[in-house]
Length: 530
Image 1: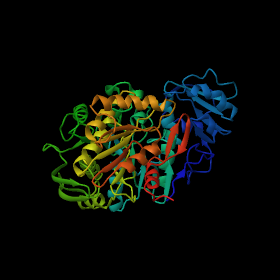
Image 2 (image 1 turned 90 degrees about the vertical axis):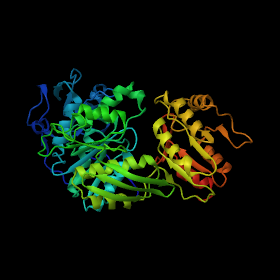
Image 3 (image 1 turned 60 degrees about the vertical axis):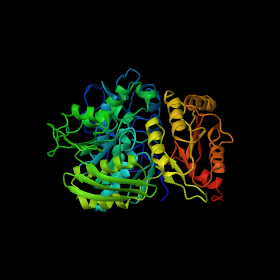
């Protein structure tokens, strides 16, 4: 199915939502739960729609001005008014003209959560929500849980990095986790379509900005934490604190049964999180902790495992019993994803046999060690790995599987954490025989400057330029040409891994987004794409 772009419609400013009541909503109903100290609008004022983007506003709408990381929504209050907004909710209402309703709040983000929830009628009621956060593994874990729930007969929705979807419909999303309005709009459409379970990847940006604060998760998963997004969070402690919000918010919705925190106990930050939530006990006052990992103390752990190019065979011990898994997913790190999905599914009362069936049925995940069906003498894979830890994990997986060379093609994104570039260069050089440095999404940075920072790490690891030995690194800024060069030098026994973009079908150069897909570039380089 071809993904749809989320159309801008008259009532939501985000996605098409069916089944909403036709009557307008009164302001007093939208403001339930919102803490405000001033309101100039009539409480029975009728509101046609809601938006936090002034470009989406239509006559009779309510506009919420939110301070963002790069832009301040308060600067767009005049634009929202010009577009016909009848009411403004903001932390600073000084620019709201007479005749337009104004609601003064101390926290616009919190207000937006309540307003979106009220507008869409608390769509999560009767749903089971599972949230997943962590640096790596969110997407694969979400696909595994989706497969498990489907095998259990549950109609399941997913909000994540690859897309937003439920049976019969796929939306192409701009972010891993959309804003509060889009989340509630998606949940409303899913609920009206009969979806009973929703799996949501929750990014650190979304947690820091409170986008998912209105979602009462039954289970929350912590996969791991390693360096990423430090351009936004500035420190690892700040990054970790953002992740913890998914768990410290658990239980505040007053569920009768304690929600579950599913935590990777092999990760140092996971251990820290367990202490925060009440120690390494199975239960704390309001949250049930389910630990997973390779250690014998973990509640969900493998008794044994075997990994090769064909997949994973493992026997997993859980509090409910032991199950055997034969999955086509590749890599030791995917054992962790399987354990996470198992624990999360247990937390929402899925039978162990159905968990095993769902895991075994999942054939692969787009852009996650995805093998391209190319006419080539060597395996060629693409992966989304764009952090040092993620790159290390995929190279660690592939190194023992090749009889020749591991050829790694990758770059780093522009306008993002610069400190990880030499780190990733060093990792690539230490774990590959050939490194092809290229562009990822350079955005507004100089692509060559980014590549040179990666090169510093490659050279620092002792790798020299590619030469007659068939070892070394080369620099090719054009990603398509870089992929073609990697294909051109490969011989039987080699493995090519193209990292950084995975499922993405675009490249951002300057402020422009152009179509580009690593998989298509591979097929073209190998003569399979006409």
